Structure formats: C-alpha cells, structure tokens
Image 1 (cartoon, helix red, strand yellow):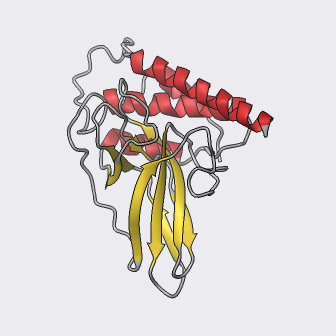
Image 2: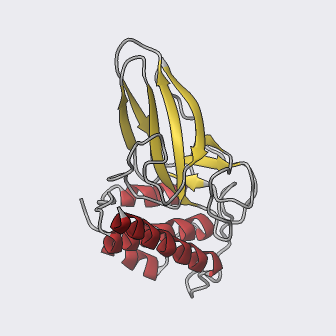
Length: 229
C-alpha cells in the first residue's frame, strides 16, 4: 500500500511539473512565430464556449452527472479503477450514467468530446481516444476518465471544481491530431516512467495544436516516438 501511494505521488508530482512547463512554454519556434491561426472557441487562451456537435446518447441511457476525482486516489470514482484507461491526461473526471432499460447498453464516448469547466481559470478537457463501456440493465455505472487539457496557462482541476459535458469538437487541426493518435497505443502500462513520458508527449501535442493549429518539427518527432498499435 505504501509503495502504491508513493507511486501515485510520483505521478502527481510529474504531472504538476509537466503542466507547469507547458503552461509557461509559448512554443515560439521558427515555424510557429508567424502564424495567424486563431484558436477555436474554448481552446488555448479563449474563454468562449467550445463549439462542436452535441453528443447523442443511446435511448435509455441517462447522463446523471460529473465531478472531478482525487488524482492520488485511483478508486475515488466509486471504486472504479482507471487502470488501462486510454491516454490518461490531467483532467480527472468521474462520470455517472444510468441504464433505464432491461438489457445492457454500450456507452461510446468519442474522441474529441470536450468537458467544460465552469470557471475559466480551470482547464477544459478533451478526449483523444474513444472510451467504450457496457452498462448492465437497470444499473448505474461510474466511468472515470482523465481528459487532456486544452488551455495552456490555466490550472488543472481539483476536487470541488464543476464541469459539464460539452460538444464533440469539429476543429480540423485537433481532429487531424486525434486521427494520428488513433494509430498509437496510449493505454496505461502501470509503469510510472513509461506512462508519465507518454502523458507528457500527448499533452504537449494537444496544447500546441490547440494554440497554433499545427505541430512543429519537434512535435512531429514526439508523435513518432509514441508506441504504435
């Protein structure tokens, strides 16, 4: 138990250092310095409402609520583990769904789905890979996720911050990145060093695409370093 706690603490410290570095990094490289790109609403430094296509849930499946969970307690989402969750990011959220039917329903959360913070000083989050869960008949199911931050300079969420489910982005540059990440194996391995490295690379890519609408040469090299499926 002590070793597990120390491992989680190590991940937390790594997360804070990565986010701090990304938030302060303006990425003013040669191929970014002359860009006229305007970030999508709700991305990068924009405080506007994110835009996109509304998520439509299957008939009989109700979305009951959402709240951040404690990043150091992997069972804080009603005991549901997040081990193996795809592309673990720095916006930890606990989603609750209810199946009202007499048979199981498959929940599909698509890549590009945005989670909107009530406070503009707190990160909005985005999924970069699909999440699929089967919800038994007449049952509630808690779904822990860790979305990627899309706002360099904002704070990562903590317990008590309020979120709501937003749209699925139609932003071309972000969808292009998501398409490229679909060829990568982003599942958590359980190895702190490997997972932290993958998380940091994905987060940098998401930040830079959110802000600049493209990847620079260094970003492309990071993408190439991610493990393939």
